[in-house]
Length: 84
Image 1 (cartoon, rainbow, N blue to C red):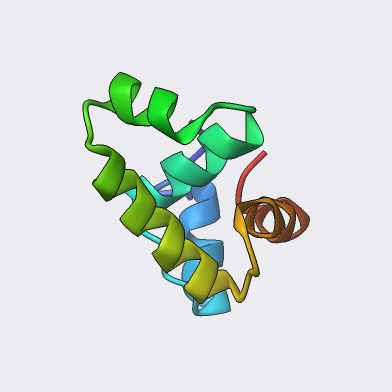
Image 2 (cartoon, rainbow, N blue to C red):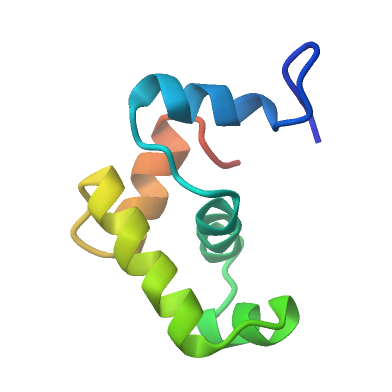
């Protein structure tokens, strides 16, 4: 994972902070999983999380990104370079 110089946080994390979104690493993982075509239940199982936890993350990142739905959130995150 690419990091900022002198930091252990992913390079894109500082961009999140500059944009004011402050998505958590977990929210970023869920967003990336969606971008990769993974179902939320599949991600929950692979990440060892509950469906409710994953659903909570989607609600939060949609609010923070101003997205209408998960697909919209992925599109916003991709445009801003927050996920790949």
